[in-house]
Structure formats: C-alpha cells, structure tokens
Amino acid sequence: MIVDDDALVRLGLADLIGADPGIELVAQAADGLQAIEAARAHRIDVALVDVRMPRMDGITATARLRALPRPPRVITLTTFDLDEYVYDALAAGAEGFLLKDSEPADILRAVRLVAAGSAMLHPSAARRLIDRYHHTAGPQAQAAREKVARLTPREGEVLALLARGATNADIAGALHMRESTVKAHVSRILVALEVSNRVRAALLARDAGSVQTHE
Image (tube, rainbow, N blue to C red; front, side, top):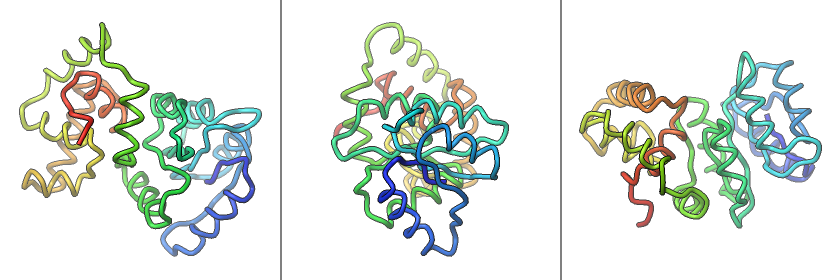
C-alpha cells in the first residue's frame, strides 16, 4: 500500500511497483485515515507511509496500522532533509525508512526486505537521524545497557551489525554463519531486549552506546 497525500508521489511509486512482477500494489491512500480503512479491507504486507499528511499523519497512522489484527509492516517515507518526526515513526513500529529521492531499485529492495522480516534503514541517513534526535544519556541509556548485557558475546556481534542496517545475509557473511542461524540469534535478541522488531533493537543498541554511529 502507498500512503501519501501527494498524488504525483503516489503515481510515481505506483508505476515503479507496477513494473515489478514480484510485488503487487493492493491499495493507495491519501492520508492516515484512508490507510487504516484500506488495511482493514485488504491483506497488505507492506505499507509505504509518508510522514506529513492531513487528517492523520504518518506517525499516528503507523501506530494504528501496527495495532491491527493483521498489521502490515511499515516503511516511513521522508524528505531529503530528514524530518525530525521519522524517529517517532520508527518508535511507533515502522520497520525502517526511505528518503523520497531514493533510487527506484532501493525502494523495491526495501519493500522486499521488510516483507521478509528485515529492517531497511538508509545507512548514512539512519545514523545522522538517530545521532541528532535520539540521545543516549540518563536512565534510558542505563536501562538499554542492562538489556544489552543479557546477550551472549555472539548475540552482541549480531546486534552490532543489525544496528548498522545489515540484513540477515550480510550478518551471515560477516560472521561466517548460516542465515538460518542468524535468524535464530535475531529472534533471541528481540526476546532478550524486550522489543518487537529489528528497528527497535537497533535503537536500543544505540541507546546503550554499544554501536558506533559514525564511519
């Protein structure tokens, strides 16, 4: 599903998705309220959701979508200057975000990755965004460090790569593991950190200061 109040953006994304035989465009919405209605009426795997929209913004819509009985995974769309609300969207349950001027191939790759259960955080943009709007001081950082301390050394290595936006395949290659083993580690990490998805695990790792956010 494409959720954006700009008709030209919706048209461009619809053309892009329509040209890919492996992805089906199920619905379009011009704001968050329409997105909720569409998600209730259709089985949607992934929703591309704009941040700034009338009636219901993308942050509220993301939380509402993720609360549905059959919740779609959400990719937040943002402008090139990195809207400060994107972090809030990730905290609301989005599996990642894309810049609106991303390459078409990157948008299609993001849809596939998120549909498969991975996160899609635009690497450099993700670091800059979290550095700017997500601080690691005080009790929140201490709580994050306590949770990260529950992990085994191997799980810590997996988390560090995950927090940099690595896919399961990337992690498997870097740590010389089977991808199925990586998936098992990720599942255990989510339970240990008490988070629902990879994005929140990445943010918690950054809270804990266990991941370097600069190249």
